[in-house]
Image 1 (cartoon, one colour):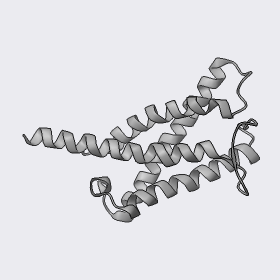
Image 2: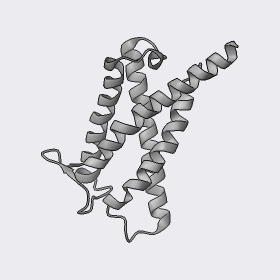
Image 3: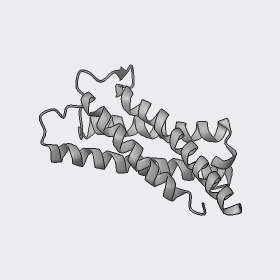
Image 4: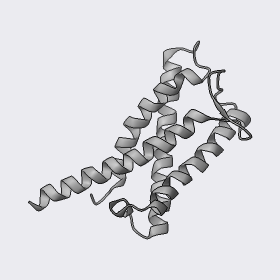
Amino acid sequence: SRIPEIPIAFSCFFLNFFGEVLQTYFYALRDVPFRTMLYGWIHCTFGDVLLTIISFWLISLASQNRKWFFHLNRLNLGGFVLVGIIFTIISERVNVHVLRSWTYNQSMPLIPLLEVGLTPLLQWMMIPPLIILLVRHHLISHSAAEDS
C-alpha cells in the first residue's frame, strides 16, 4: 500500500492485454504473423500501463495525495479518466493518421470529426476506473487484514 503504482501497473497490464486482444478484430491484422500480433498487443499494453501511471500521477499531483483513490470523488476519478481519454485520442490520431503505425479495418466504429476508433476510447473509459476500484478494494482489504 506504500507504492500504489505497483498493483495499479500489474492490474493494468493484465486487464489491458485482454482488452488489446479483444480489439484485434477492429484492426488490420488478419494477415500478419502471430508474433507480429503478439508484439502489437504487448507494445500497446505497455503503452496503456504507462498512460495509466501518468494519469495516476497527474491526479496525485492535482490532489496532492498519492492515495487519492481511497477517498474517491467525481473530480479525481473523472480527471483520471479524462486525462486518459485525451492521451488516447492524441495517440490514436498520431499512430493512425500521422505515423501509420497501425490501421483500422472497416469494422472499427469511428468517432466523427476525430476519426479515432471507438474501441480504444471504450477500453480507456472502462478498464482504468475498474483498476482503481480493484486496487482500492485490495489495499483496503489488505490494510484491514493487517490491523486485525
